[in-house]
Structure formats: C-alpha cells, structure tokens
Length: 415
Image (cartoon, rainbow, N blue to C red; front, side, top):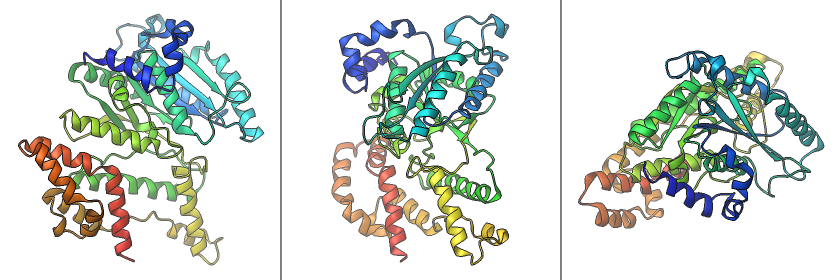
C-alpha cells in the first residue's frame, strides 16, 4: 500500500477527467482545504431525483449515527464529534444533458437549492456535501455521455480529495443501518491486508404494485442465482455488477484507470477491471462481500437502456401481452417470470473452466472463434511453470465479457 500516493498522482495527471485542472494547479487552488479531510466517500450521480433523493441522504446519515454508537467511533458522544475524518464525504454529481427536458432541468434546480439548505441541517450532521453542478445552464454532461461519466467524475474528485474508500451509490438507493460501520471496517482491511475492493448485498425496495413486485422479485432471484452458479463454475467473475453495491480502495480505483464511462454497463466493466487487478496481484479469486446491504429502487425507469427499471418494465409488458385479457390480474401475475439459464449451460462452463479442454464441451465452436487454443498456448508458455499464475492468466483471458458471450452462444444452440 506504500505506492498509493504515486498511484494517485499518476491517475489524476493522466487518466482522470480532472487531469487538466489538476495539472494546471487549479484544483488545488479551489479545493486544497478538502484534501485529506475524509477517509470515506460516497459518490452519487443524481438526475431528476427531487425530492425523493433526501430519503437516500437520511438513510446514509442514520447509518452514520448508528456507527457513532459503536466502539468503532473514537468519541464517546455523537454530539461531540468534531473530527472531519469521522464524517462521510458525500460527492453529488447533479447532471443532465444539454437537450434534456425542461422538467428534468427544473427538477435538478430544485435539488441543488435544497442541497444548499441541507448542508447546515442537523439531520445530516454526519455528512459533508461536495456538489458538482452539471445541470444547464451552469454545466451539462458531454454529448452521448451518461451515468458512467457522472459517476467517474465524482469518484475522480474523491481521489483528488485523497479519500481512502470510494463507495458507489445511486440517488434512489437506501442503505442498511450498519452500512457506514461496515465501510470503516473495510477501511481497516484495506490498511492492514491491502484489500482492493468489495461488494455489498442488495435487496430491492418494495414496489408500488403487485405486478412490479413480482417482476422485481423474479429479476433479483435470477441475479443472485446466476451469481451463485457462476461462482460454483469456478470463475472469479461471478459477483452481480450493480452500481450501488461497489466499493473500491483509492489504490485499486487508480490502478484500473477509474470508473468506465459507458452510458450503460459502466458498473460491469469497472467490476471486471477490479477483479482482473486482484487476479494480477495474486490475491484470492473470491470477491470480498461486506456484511451489509443496499436497497435500490424498484421503480420503472428508462434512463439507462440496460438498467433494472427497463428490465422490470419489459417483464410486466411481456406478461400482459401473453394474456388475452390483461385485466385479469391473476393470469398476468402468473406470467411474470424472469427467464433463467438452462442448467446445462452452467455445466458446460464448469467443465471447460476445470479442464481447459475446448474439445470436451459444447462451447467448442465458440472457443474456436475466440482463438482459445492459440491464446492458451501463449499463456502456458509464459506462466506454465507456476500453476497459480497459469490459473490467474487463464481467468484474465476468459473474463466476464467472454462468459456473457458464451451464454449467448449456448442460447443460440437451443434455437
């Protein structure tokens, strides 16, 4: 962990969205007083979330209060806490595109005003706010950018402020009472054992009607079952890639060149990079799961093409289309079910990961197209003398994206 400072400087000067301001010294002129003042940062991209976003803030502050009541807090009474490092730095990236609707921009304006008032309110005393205004006319997201850019920008500020832990959250997500306590426990792991990243558990909030509830229950069940089966297959790329569950050390964040900027799926690519970093550093192939949970919203939303909201909407609409009379609620409910993968696909995946023999699996044609034999020969030539390094190099090649493509290949085989 001794290289974290150098790692941080290299990232900020070459890979960060803030590199121009950092290299010019303007960041230090503006925000030097915030550097090294907080150990834990929670980064939240926000768009069109007023007023419900304050439920997220209250949830986070309640978790901080709970932390103060434990032995992990050095002060005996919360009212006497003055050390800024004991507070959570909440970095809020309020964002919109230049051509977003007037309703979205106005909603963001209301949130920005309310956040100014919230900074000094007693009910948020465990939180320090740093607000990034990317809402017209003050600013806006670059064209064709979205939540990935906003999340990366917020996390880059956290790196500049030298926060040790970067926790991702969404503007519609609540946290468990022990969330902050667990973040500080993870900080201890980072400092003592060099942990790189971790994930939390997740449970979606109660939906507004029985159709959405059935859909979110089915989708959540699929996500967790699929993760469990992938772990059983022996791949390290098994955790669910859900933005608000991701927690990174500052060293790991810089080492993987920060958050991915993709409009959708940024959390998947970021998590994959963190797992590959862990593999490269010779650590356990198991991802650390923190004993806490976050509670994402169950609402329907089309803001992200491949997000949970769009999946839920699709499930409900598909069920209604399968029923002649969609007014018969019981029949619609029966049809709402997220499709699980067939068990034989997991069996074939496990067989290949175990044997590394493409001829002994139904994935043969897929692996041939991916040039597995050619690549694995190179891997064996470079790492064959060390079984541990050979296994690590194999998993780096057969990564999460290839696993997704292998599942798509198997689905096509069934048609």
